[in-house]
Length: 292
Image (cartoon, rainbow, N blue to C red):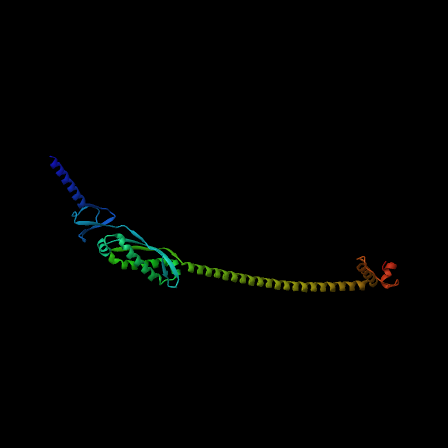
């Protein structure tokens, strides 16, 4: 009885091993190839439980989701002979597992080396026809679209679809960066010098205009002053003449008193005159009345 029990248990173990080797599960995120002695005999796209010939057929699984490959920084020469260190990444999907298996084998990561080479070549080719301004402007989207189309065409025989190619970072080499910074500094200094020169020119022009206006105003003021002074002197002369004609004696007395005031008003005047000088006449004797 023990022999029968042992045989039954052994049979169950063998059956379990055979069943386990025959059945496999395909997830929704997978595509599966069934290979028999290295030759693909079946492709499974639908998820669920599937069977294969145990110990003869092998299951090769491929991810149907988006996959990402990051490229190391590569130096690229642009169309305007500028140099850029371009750090990019590529997003792809395995669309044809059979083609992929025939091209690179059962390991999905095996495609990365080939993809890196193709993307780098396309980057150099396309960006070599564009300037630095194009790469840094809105035209960058067109450049990346062109690169994606070229990589897609080159990878068509590998069963791979390129969903996107993007530049993650684009830096200038150290020597180029320093040269650009120096040129930018020189340009800013030139602009500052030009602004200062324009400011000095404007200042000189404003000063010249102000000086000219001042000179004109002073000339007009002097002319007006001389005119008014002449008119005043003429009016004074006329009035003096009228006063003299009305009463010459009174006019002489008034003019003499005015002369006294002008001479002696300061208090420190010195006159050397004889006592009988006519100028001192009214200081010695009051003038006689000229009217009733």
